[in-house]
Image: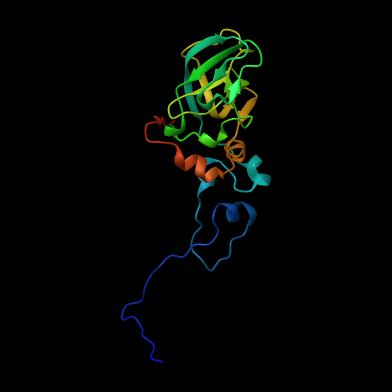
Length: 186
């Protein structure tokens, strides 16, 4: 078998260790040139035991667009998959699956944060909206900030939690956030 040799030496860089490897192995092998950091750049660990070493760099927010008092026995959102078990104060959020929020999180005990408190998502996540229970939030009103992913006070909806509830992986949560979601870099 004939072997070919390049006339000019090829100069290339080789990498080893993606995000999980960077966290799990303190001493990378010296024969390669670099590591390939991915999701750890978001402050999200692919290995749960290392999350305490990182600080999430992204918060995903929306606002309440409408608040209504709903009597017992009324259905919320498409398909009548949630019926109010009691009188409830329900807020409509200006975010949905067209923004990248997971549709399949519907009716899975998912929550968002309002005023540092967890508020359950009610019924189905729609293309542009979702509904939440704000019955325990005094004075919740249109315009109030809502955390879809991130920290508010002592509470947090982590990317890992959101992914687990949706039955997916954190990489999908971060990469599916749509173009119409405004980015603010601080």
